[in-house]
Length: 62
Image 1 (cartoon, rainbow, N blue to C red):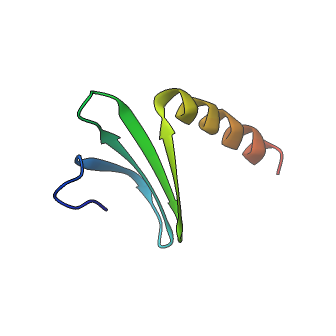
Image 2: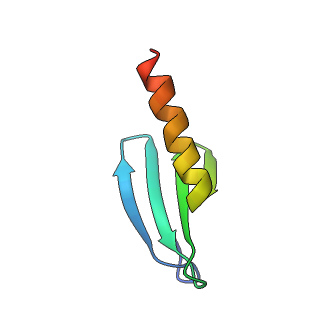
């Protein structure tokens, strides 16, 4: 997930193919990362909250 030059991360959820983790950055900002195969999405806290709302709505409409 990270090498020795990266801030330490904490896995939030993981499946065989996907992973979500958060990182406490040096400036005390928390960033969230969603790894979907070869694609990784990066979110700041405010963006993460909006993304979670979006996925909840999408899940409730399936």
